[in-house]
Image (spheres, rainbow over the protein chains, first blue to last red):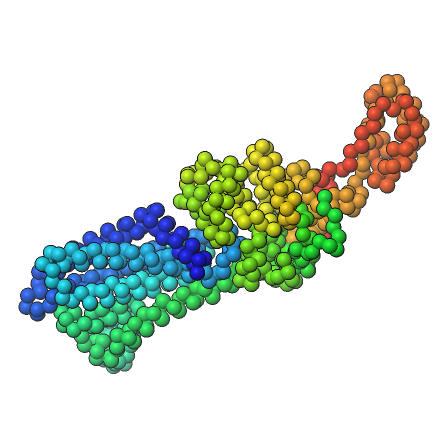
Length: 275
Length: 312
């Protein structure tokens, strides 16, 4: 445990030193605040609370931003140390290889935790103060923050997998951008394109929902937009998840699997790696 | 020099170890036994397999065939965390986390070995980095990095030291200082494996040399053993009273090997076995001989002998 803490603390200190954490807090906080101010205007007719609307816009934005931040933190984590030669020295110390990975993971997850909860959390406090203390819908907001952290964890894990598989940092950077494009843009594009071309021949509603569930970003989005009634009504997305019969728990499991599987694969590759 | 006997437990034992990277053979059939307290020096050209040999003993890579045992266990990968507490490693051209200060780097490594911060300060003082410890490692010179590398290798009083080209980038005074540190650790019973190009520096310190060439151990032994193996000539410089040179040369006989003859004396060479008889013959010449200097072959001669000779 002490090893993990030492390794994690090093990553957190690195994050503080190179102002990564500060930058991420500012970006996330500013966006959350901007969206909440803009988003509170058109709520009148459907009687959604200001926070509900903010959750919708923030969840949609987080799908782009959180994976990007997570990948930027993680793509370099292993290949960078291989390339510079610091990993070789580190592994002659009494640390186990899984501790190196998990220590880094804990550290990077903490950085994301700080950024998300300080950024989004700070914004909600300002929002509540501006709305004369109305806190309706805060639960959805907290769930949104927590699931954003899981979304971050998914892309940290994917970033590590890229980082342990490639030979050079430049390749890792390219692959990270590719991953981001795939899960954030291309997957949905292909899915909807296929749906249009198919005209309901092969792709049933069930299959379509399952294909959505497979993508971590879609699951995150549906999870946030469907979990609370106020949010789902305002988002008009209630049909997708409930129609397919996905429970919140199932979606959570899918997301956690997206963390565990790449992380386990990273460990497996790293264990066999020779330096 | 440490007497090698059965009392000293074996610290490292390699048996017919080979290592291939793809189709390239980096080490082939290396046997090596190192006893506790020994100082073993690896010499050989770049690419001879010295670093790979160290990495095998450190558990950073696995042998393709053969067995590697360090302190009675397999160092490979996760097999032996406890073992790693007792060893120190200074890699060739050591790399650190550039954004951290020297002190932060050392404290980070110290925590992994459960060494106190106070000990870190002592080590920083010892390697002369106390003043620079608040600066980022990125601003350090080659020599300073090397010193920081030494400091981290010495964390927790290691029993087994692996030093890959330890004195590159160090100025002569620091080199002496460095060997002093190594000697101190040896007095406490530490074992060390040093790879070096600086033959004259390590000549006096090593208990044993391992000469490597293209992944093969071409010779292994103490300096004396290597002299005998190489059967390089011993050189004698005989100073003679003026005017007596020719007389002396005649009386020594025709069967000796005279390299050079001058007014002041003779330069002779002979094999190690012929050395004592020759010296006796010279001293029998009495007062005509004013001085006699004997120089055994130097390590670099032994080294180039083994390197030039195609023994593979």
